[in-house]
Amino acid sequence: MGALTFKGARLAPVEPPIAPGGPFSLGTVAVSGDSMNPTYREGDWLLVRWKPAFKVGDVVVIERQERPGVYLVKRFLRDVDGLIWVEGDNPTSTDSRKWGAIDLSEVVGKVLFRLRRGKKQLRKSNPGR
Image 1: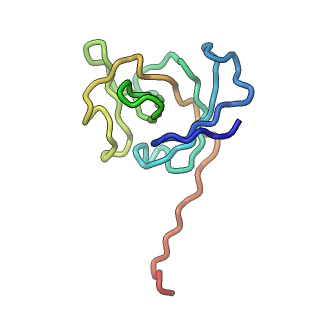
Image 2: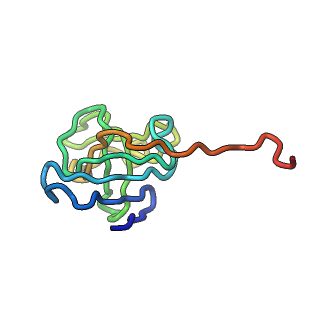
């Protein structure tokens, strides 16, 4: 199965998925964007457990109700009156600082660990040379 591309993340399901839809359903996410810098950067591949249990401090994958099909990687920071507060590690991230707390049902995955580090972007200090 080829990678699926969404704004904010490219998702490539593990083939075949392990117990699809169950508590041990796994997949991968390729990071796109800088909202989780410095923890994760563009091009990093992350192993994700779909429909997970999670706790404060975990990095989670969310799908906003008003933006179905768009998956975002954020850190779960706290509970707020039955809702949850998520933020990117980069202070310029679009997250609960803009949206407010989100519904628990919007968490669709938990990042287990980085599978592969993305390649660093090389910058030339003298582009004319």
